[in-house]
Image (tube, rainbow, N blue to C red; front, side, top):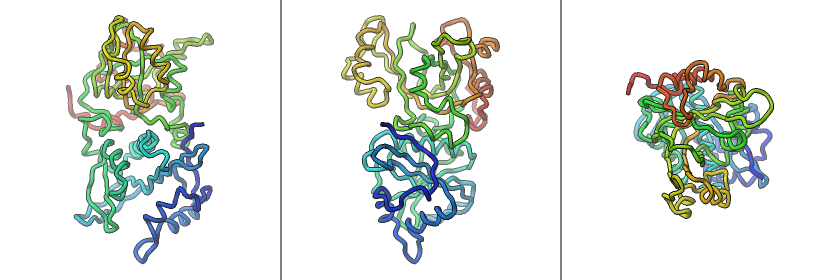
Length: 369
């Protein structure tokens, strides 16, 4: 069965678990360092908590965050004291190395950093953890130097966001976008693909669902016409209610927002644009559909489009924006919704209605189209 992230107290965890062996070896106690074991016991006495991923095999990931406001002494230089979020520990079990659990963990950490409004987030990591370093760099962490312990110090700053790549800028939307769009997803498919959207904004609830599938999402659809999305543009995820109880105008709603990272046109009006094997390679392990289900869509649908996105944020329970509000405020239009182009101001207005702090999502609003 899939596992899930939860907030757990250090005192609830077994320090003798083999999962922690590498941390004990990498961080022994000496005259200059408290060591991992003593640090762990100290945190347990203090009642501290960590993000812990568990499955049927045991611990799969362990993440601990800390708020800081002090200088960082590097071998190369000293970084001034500012508000920072520190990833004190980020450890994945061997069976999850190279899988998308690490992406999910980094996504949760960056959402937490965004919400805190701290200027920077950083982590210390040994060079031998090349795979994890690669994931951190993909999400915009940059090498700032090395600490006296020999670890690399990787930092991500609000003031130096690389908007050329949606992964590097996550979770902040490129302020230079001109248009946004809608992605229409039927309810059952939606709740599998975008699991956080029905949750409140508390971290305790956010981490309760599985992030084994990461925050990069694949949508496979058969639109009436090719969507006008561009790479780097935001899209609003619209959950279309397909049930028969209650008003669809209230139950169908915008729940989340993503940024498009790729669009693959596999088939148009019955004409294949891509071979099936090549399509499967492009999709990888990011789809909620298995190969057989994708094959069926590939063979039977007249038009088949695959949209790859990064799951940038969600409104949460009680904040989702229903169809009636969109229609009554002029945000739905008369064309098929996937063809509609929203302006930046319209997109921001919908985020605000979803109780999103727009200034903490689009942090540089001085740039215009």
